[in-house]
Image (cartoon, rainbow, N blue to C red; front, top):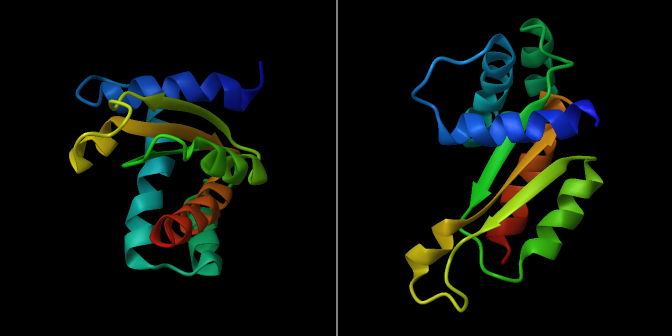
Length: 134
């Protein structure tokens, strides 16, 4: 099992149980993962983000991302994007099929982990652009 394959269930479990004491490994994963949505919101340039990560000595930290609000059938598009960045993923498609209410889409999500924060951030930027174009 690769380091990414081992990190994925750890990340998923961590995201479902945020109100507990975390291991050092989980805290490292969480710290890196929390930077992704924050800098997406700030529209941080990729090169600036890379400098931030280097300054924080996190260049080799496995980093996770979770994305929800998906329709059934969109998995292939997201899988292709995750694979482009060599990520490991797991989908949770728990909404009724067909979707009966726009809020149901929140029950469909995926979790993915990537080799480092810069790769994860670049993935997240492309994911957001893709999501806006749907």
